[in-house]
Length: 142
Image (cartoon, rainbow, N blue to C red; front, side, top):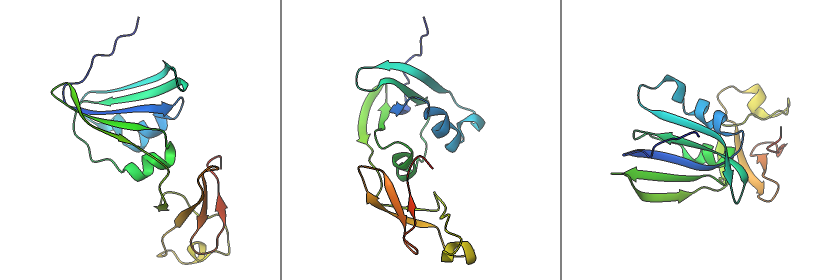
């Protein structure tokens, strides 16, 4: 049986949709750190059937906007002295900048390199974002 101990101080990123844990792990650069990190994949879950979990034995500055964009169902637990001291439930961010790129070749972001790629949440149910400049749609499966 696989056994992953609890962490004393750090962060637990929980309720990650199965398969997305590695994407978050890589985004956070956890493969290049010198402290203990655990990526646990395909854990049984009542709500999700399967989920991924990341345990980080250290404090880390995390952009919750990006994590909410990757998977809005994530929870972040801050652990101090083996106790959860703060729990945050993520959601789709209202706006994302420089996370996704507009694919419209006529968009100003394709022509002007100094213009940031900026999208607003157009349809929360579908997870659809639209470019602030040309209104081109982006859906999560792209």
